[in-house]
Image 1 (tube, helix red, strand yellow):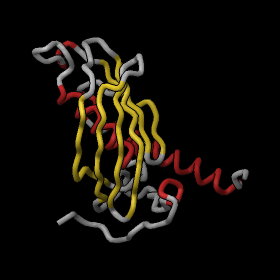
Image 2: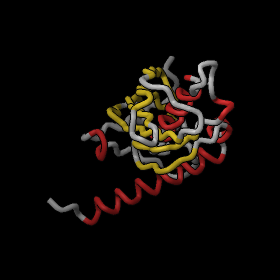
Image 3: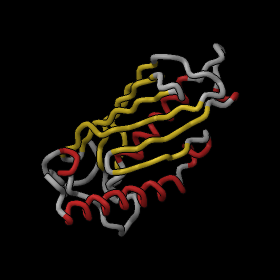
Length: 176
């Protein structure tokens, strides 16, 4: 069934919102910039980033230190879950290291939203090397807190495009 004009416009508006939100976040994200992570693409509930393994990122086994891989995956997670212009933080994360990443390798992290309801979400990030080999799998659980990434810019509360139903809660705050 073809998309209606209004759903196409909504989709374009949601992508534009995700891009604006990501640009604002990146401009003040010193940690992500410090280790050379680049944003490739972002859309609602999704991000793809790249990072080259530098000599100062390798451990005593001459492979990328797991902390850098975790930070890389966590950054992709942050851009995916904040793509609706709602301040969202991690409530839990887990990573499985499956293969070493070597000095000089260009890695990509792709994060995809799996679930989002109320103030919580679940996101999976896959880190791959240039040959497509999976280096690590990361799962992040998100929690929406008060505020917007870009104050005053419309935030997207219509989660139907990703989750299948509209569940946007107006209650915000901290997990406590």
